[in-house]
Length: 121
Image (cartoon, rainbow, N blue to C red):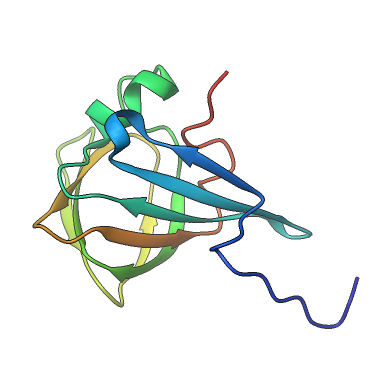
C-alpha cells in the first residue's frame, strides 16, 4: 500500500441510486473497509426510497459518520429522535427511519454503515 491514497467521491468505485431519483450512495472500497458519501435529495425518506431495496421494515445499518451539508431527522424504532446537520459527527444504531428536512440535499460521509446500504440483490 502506498503511503498516501487520494480518492475523489466524484469518481467512486460504485454508485447506488435510491428509488425515485431521490439521491445516491457513492462508495469506495478501501483497505480499511467501505467508505461512502450519501447524497439525499429533498423529499428523500428511507422508508420510501431505500426500504424497497433493503426489504426490511427499518434501516438495519449502523452508521458512523459526518454530515457535510443539509439536515436529516432520524427516528429510532423505539421512538428516540434526533436531527443532524452540517458539522455533526453521527453514530446511529441499526433500527431507524430517516428523512431529509428542508429543501437542501443532505450529504453525509459514513465509514461503517454503507457497505451493503441500498445494495440491490
